[in-house]
Length: 195
Image (cartoon, rainbow, N blue to C red; front, side, top):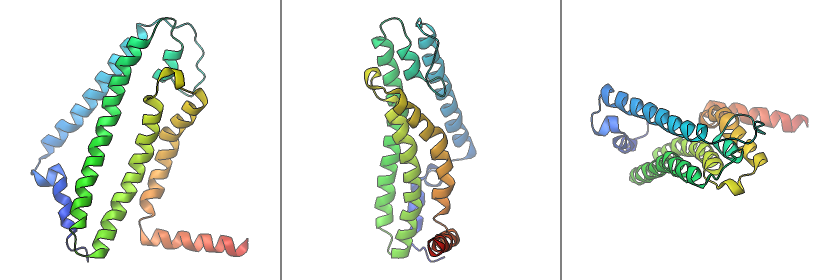
């Protein structure tokens, strides 16, 4: 395959480095689902306990920053609790992903073949672009104070991480394929020749 040395990346995944069975991955998935459910339950409870002064949401869907703006009472305590929860839920995984990429980069730099390095960085580059698009827009949306939250920017960010990013995923990942790159170049050349 011509990628001698790229096997150094594999030990960074738990299933390879620790011989993890399907059970440990099931536990990870279940704990992720339970954690997400508990977070939603707590935040929904906090919002339901707060009296709302309005009933019109100027947004695409019901999000916590919008609900907090509708509150009739002081929201600093609720905002602080939600901010901590959001920070843990968003920043902690993003930091773990960045840390894992630092380890991957370190392993890739040990690869002797330049083509192997290029291929590994190409694969990781596509993934980090997708992760950055998603986490960047969600962190922007959920980790800003109530006073600086702009409804129009919030709508754009919500559209970005719920529609644009998932639409870009296949494009970003398929552009790594040589055949797809070649076909795209042909189409772009035809378009520029005819225009």
